[in-house]
Image (cartoon, rainbow, N blue to C red; front, top):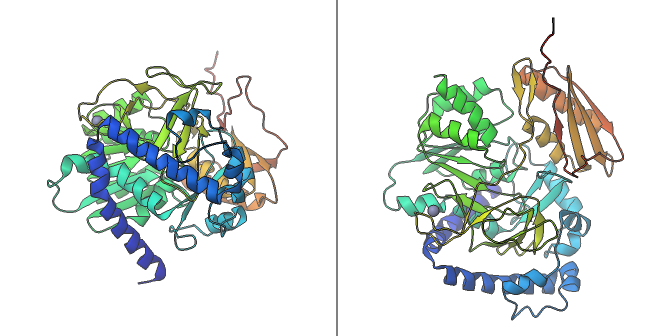
Length: 459
Ligand SMILES: [Zn+2]
């Protein structure tokens, strides 16, 4: 057994050890959850003030031993720009710096790896704006995985017999948390097989037909495409539960997926910074916030709290379980609606509606559909690429890149062209370095710009 496998097995044992207590918390009262959050919040702020010079300056006036959850609203907000600009001053392990985390990310090709024998690192271009890099502590990684699956375990306690097979159709590289975390906690009782969403659909269909998974997870757009394959009779699987994550689950996609497999569709609201922010329990279409692991403040565009039932403009995240990277009132651009209602499953973890948002456009090349992830994955892995925008062209794509150093554009060009050709799409790709990428009048960033649909001929 190599060193990585020894670590992974220990991590798996720790995760399995955490699971019963995390499942039990689903039955905690709202009061008990609130007390728990306050205690964890004080611990987090203490670590931040003791070990992060950046946080120490900003939290100088806070009495960390007495602060309450309500008083969190008086603390300053932090952004991804703050994090990426002051990375070394924010992380609480002095051995970590951005260059080293970036170097580690570049080594992640086929399999996930530990950083300093303890951490996991992930990179993300997020739904908008610049690229981010995040470090997860040992326990945080285990908490996250256990929290993704605990709603099922709560229902299945004592009922599960025999191995469970799960297929995920998601990112192909372990720089993405959705890929890496399932690799870390893979075990004989729950075999997880990852299919890359950048693969041709026929290849995924053949693999799934062979695997016959009990559980199916993946990006909503990818699963909706597979639901069509199931409706056409080409995909013949019968998952008992379907998980969706990493993209907005649009109502028509939920409908397609439910129809294809007559199984509960459990949506996960996740971010590379922290997850699960919320998890569907299968009793209804809403998701439960992880009310013991993090604090989510829905706010309007100017940062004021919005009440239950009102759509927020963004959310402020305080991650209570990741002391190595204290995220305190960290801004995420997700728009959510907290629901003031109880779930039939009776868990007191608050409900939110499916998170809405704009889905990145897929490109269509004469019937060959190219998922945005085909571009997203190589571009978000490249450390000097701050921002990018992909324009579909008749014979491939033009990619505008804003970089802060020597991005290896010829290599990226080659990688992207290869990926397109493999899917049967035309592969002429050009990358152009630009000083800035224009935003729309609303300030929204459109990362993928397809060609206009073919105009009907007038003659
Ligand atoms: Zn529920």
